[in-house]
Length: 180
Image (cartoon, rainbow, N blue to C red; front, side, top):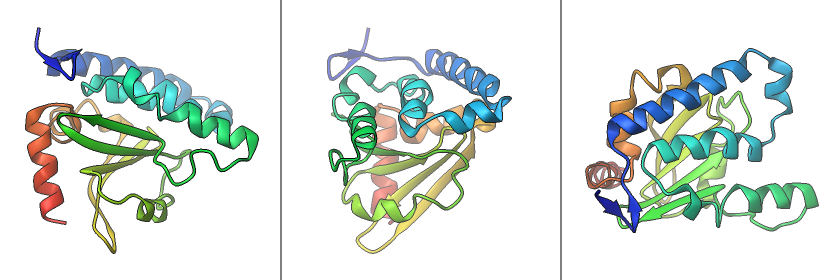
């Protein structure tokens, strides 16, 4: 079985099957607006975003060391712990991707937050319901791809090509970064 950073690689077909489960779970939750409103950013990250990035071949047990729990703790304690960091940092031999999680609806909120993230290959801004894949130059952020969760399965090959923890996606991210 192929490995990335000591983690067994998930195939594209396995990833698509995993994504189908996450999207299905979100579709059920989406039917209850009061439930969606009650979810914190940490809930969204752990219940939907982390399983989504796992479906894209990232080791979620590695990313949680710096991820949603730190930010949830800062929110609960009204402290500065984790401020200035992305909610999730995906890092491997195939590059670095920052993930900023927001509550739905995503709209334009969060784009200003991207200013603090310097040199990641890509930045994902997501509420899970919506997803923006952005690059960041010194002075501005540029949206490279926008999707609604209803399109995650239909556009899975495209998501895999840009966001997966694979060499192919690493090359795509490098091309996006070069054109920023």
